[in-house]
Length: 339
Image (cartoon, rainbow, N blue to C red; front, side):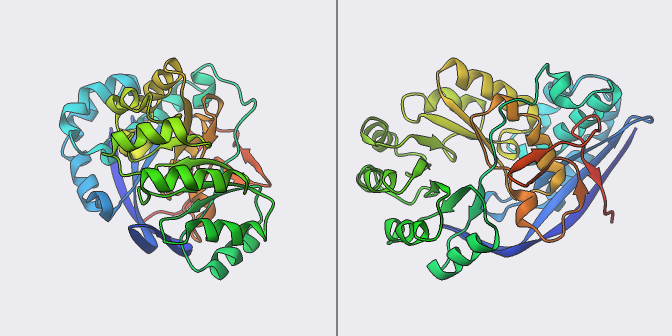
């Protein structure tokens, strides 16, 4: 077995701001996992908000290299269960390893992941393109620089509805609004009425994740659907979101990879909830993994590759208002830069 990790700084096309952070660079970890014949690649983006560093993730994975080597020929799901006790509270590192193992597993079986899972590339949801918090002028400029039929608008200011009104003057695209926990229940209910008239599709995580009573009100009184993000981190959170949200946004890094994400999708469906998968500004390595889940989803946010200047990989790409899959097995991701 061969296990390598690479560290990259992804350069963002524009300063990315949300309600609690801004950045120009996105550090990311790439995991290279080989069984001697095939090689798989995985990724997890670091984030100071969750206290996750590239160095820490790399150390966590390498510390169990002997366990990975002893189980390298098992399925990704089996390896996930075996290594899970060593990744408690370290889901980002587990995600990078799990994606690499899925990529390796697909290549060993001679199939892209979606075919390995019995899925077809039909009726795929289109990714939104994210517009971070900025001056209205700069937000308009970002939309004009990247014309797209579906935008996610990051909000969390004192003038959120006014911002959307101004943006609407410059685009007929569908908007999704992500308040990143910045609103109250009253604000959300009132804003939903105004935003519905501005062709907003849904509201993502309007309230702080612990405000369950507020979310009960919003769930019953909002005229727009509400989608959980920070309230839905791990598998145990899906059921907790039922009756509070109309859908969940699953992040591979937060839940620990494709293995738990697929289980979360299945559970959300059983509970009658809409399903979205989001990204953390990964390169095309991480975005490619998300791409194979598309047949299972209602919504997707996989614009990481579109938001960076120096993508380090080829694979599943979003452009021309479509998602394009390479004719390669596994996730289809292929590193084009190495360190």
